[in-house]
Length: 68
Length: 262
Image (cartoon, helix red, strand yellow):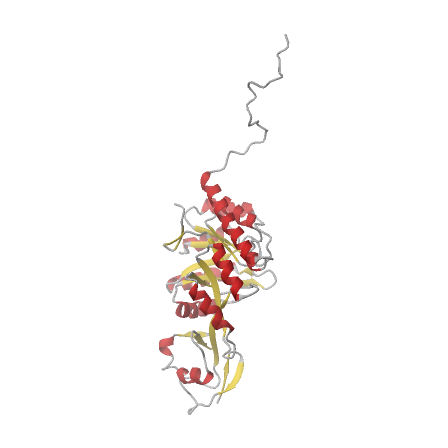
């Protein structure tokens, strides 16, 4: 299935059409530390396993960066 | 009391420093150390798994043992602010958030109306909000009244280095909000600008470009460290009364060569 992560359409080799967020992040190769939003809404780390991702979802995976 | 208090935490340094725009990560580290700052701002952006640059930054920041102040820079709506703040809280393990909500793309002027809405939501959600705002007294007072223990009016627009464009407004805010921790955030370009902010009674100064974009960032960080101390101590010492007419400091009594004509 194809999912848009960080603005890019990525082919995710998931077994189902609605994989868990945990699976999607593993397949994407997200490197800790990171935080996640789906469709602009923050998803707590404790919710990853029970959150399913649909092909129409927009994911943001963010990490620390310099800032003023 | 000569320490800076932010949401109950005490700090010896009155400089808050940004982590962006340095020529290199190593110069950033040296400059932060030279500034003596104990609080650093940083942000969150989309990660790219093939780029390890972010990892190096994060490792150095952690090694500096600073108090982190994540920002919501670049957000243009309440929804973006609230969600980025929640992501920051989880990742950085802090409920501090530097609230930035841009209202004008050209001047990067904060949106005062949406900012109040965002602050209200964040405070109710348990955040300790440090809003970056304009130098409008009523806005600052409203933010303080709703629970912002720290309010951060700008000196001038972000990254301009023009210093305090409206000292009158900043002084007025200081006088009217005596119990709020006030920080001048943005627009500082020279150490003297920071000194001026402290002389107005501001509790701290937050800066980034002034150090990061100096010819020698590490030396400039040292200069700002001293400027902050000079300004704060000058304020605490209490300035002499201003006068309109010259008054000699050397005694006139006993002046030689003067003879009363008889």
